[in-house]
Image (cartoon, rainbow, N blue to C red):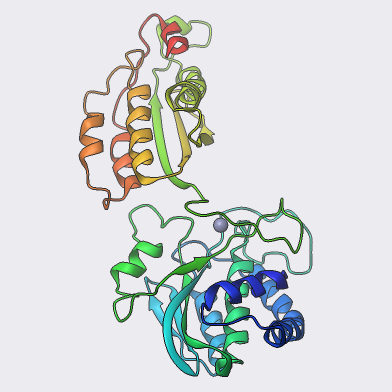
Length: 355
Ligand SMILES: [Zn+2]
């Protein structure tokens, strides 16, 4: 457990908390006292990971631990979100501290006593640490109400990794459900663990630091033929493998190289049928506007003339016109879900290489 992060959290979260030497000392002592409890806490959550919008046990445990501190959490925000207010002894500004709580669909390979007990699910992104830091910071602040003015609203946010397809979730839904309706915080703070940093180090920057991500799924349908006569059919596996390479042209040749963008193919299922391949990916980038541009480019890329049969796909212009508040992911999915399109490869696939 990174106690320093809690210290940093406290300093950032409470503007009116003047860090005089005695107070800093008290925070250090209290953090050290809490350390064994927080290590146990982190390991409990690590053993019980839950996927986005399914964090029922996680939310119940967060609420239980907050009630144990004498706090009054509100549950069921955006499905499985939990929020709790810690008030200082004197009136003052409101700030918020946000921790994400969901895990990833990854099998834990490390054999440790606190290994995930949920098959195929793991806290691989550190949200078990984040929510523990949230709980620890709330406990420290609750124990020193007399030392600060104003309040801190702790947000335990579900579905940071993205709600399952067809569901809403995460910060957007918390806002839609009015989490800040009563009082808008002056600032919202959050953090993410970073294994590449030295233990005890804290790094920060102004503005955006984490990329947004979109997912897409492309189905390539071929036409069966005998392996000895490929010219009589359409080899979906070959087309899909060319597509994987061509998609990299977005990052390498279409986007300003000073802008961070990553296009990743996470899964390529060639399946049991030689007719069909499915690619599922993450498109990560750094801003909403940029996101739409990437989407438009990806569409342009994948609908180049070497892949035909995409007439039903909306134009990039149409994609760009959609209001930002529409989930970019669903916009993207809407046109990238090409499962009904029969993709065939015209002669001259060499165009791929000139994209
Ligand atoms: Zn994360």
